[in-house]
Image (cartoon, rainbow, N blue to C red; front, side, top):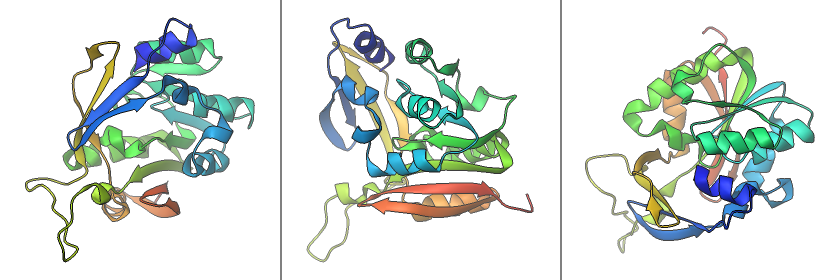
Length: 232
């Protein structure tokens, strides 16, 4: 994905990305979508950007569209974090402060707002690892800080029987997927990607000393805000 971001920014014959998961077929993702402006973003993204305040960490920043809006239009102090060297270099060229690092390895600063958008729960990988990520996020926000994160309940993607029951795979949570990106004939290794229904996220958040509220719902997707429990 970083290569696609780089090619688009430098006008080096960019092509559409192709994505697929363990439960869905190949899908086209125009690289231009990663460079969209505020008006082109969905309602959940727009709401999150409106709620962001203070010093902001944008995790999984990609091409930097969210960070750029907060920096240029909201005049907020923003740091963009991504694991892709090419993506973070493009963010730098767009005038955004960046760190190229895994979220779990990042430390040394705390923030008033941490953003995880475009299925922000994806980086949690699996239910088994969700506590590790939430505990790390707990260390990244100030006492009165907030985490704004979105996800989608993908139960709708599974077949139903005549009585309305859902056929879901045994042996794991239905939101745990393998995610693959293809670009210009090359394929990334599959990564673990987690979609979470709100109740499951709520239970995990509360088990890790967060208070959580659902800010908005848009069909099967939602935006949630996590804050530290006052006693933690």
